[in-house]
Image 1 (cartoon, helix red, strand yellow):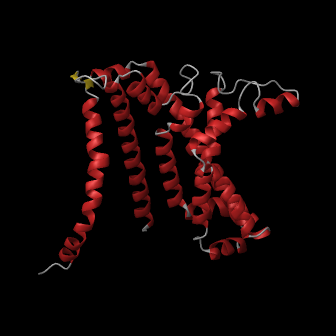
Image 2 (cartoon, rainbow, N blue to C red):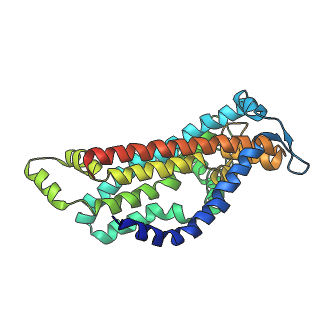
Image 3 (tube, rainbow, N blue to C red):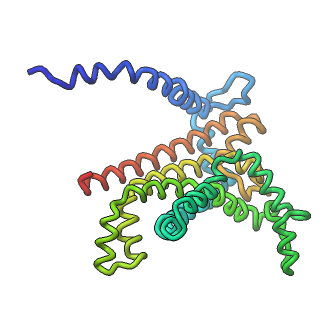
Length: 300
């Protein structure tokens, strides 16, 4: 018996070649080189020296390494958990109330306004926030002083630096889930909401029982993408605090950068990068598997 799938599959293979070559050249080969370098002691100039797992053993006993991953948990809260929950509520409010009461144009204006930080260059946004939070002449301290409160050195104090960065990260990140969820809400069948209203369901019941259930695939995507982004965060930390004061805001990507380019400890920087990459790959596999199992249970 002749298979009807074989010619079709062969026909598609040539179209995959550019993508496979790009994947090898841009992702696979650099990653394998990074893994190889992580087993060496290398300053980036002279010949690397093979030291086996010494860099990994060093990482396990390095307080700065663990502090960077601890700080990454705060960043995950600011870039994944808070924006996802706030984005869900805001998108439902804009879609259900603002669009119906004030018009779709007003809802689109608010959607674009929330998304604006996503399209601003990180360097410019970071510099503006540094001005706003400047302890001597920043706008925030000027307002606080004006209403009788004491100003703070928001980014220069270990007590407030991480919380200040978290607030800025929420501002950066909120627009992304909002746009995704508002697009997802447009594919939900209005008849489902009408049937729920006839049965006496209030807004919160429709939101929790219908909206969240219907747009769950988009929620999975948003959580996964923002989680990966939060684990890789570098530019915002570089512009705002450079990991300081002390280790207050250091994250793995910036710690790797310091070892790569400031301390000439390329092997250890590659080790941190490898560990971070493995964590991201494992989390991605877990999320995709969880989503696939969910879709299989629902017969999607």
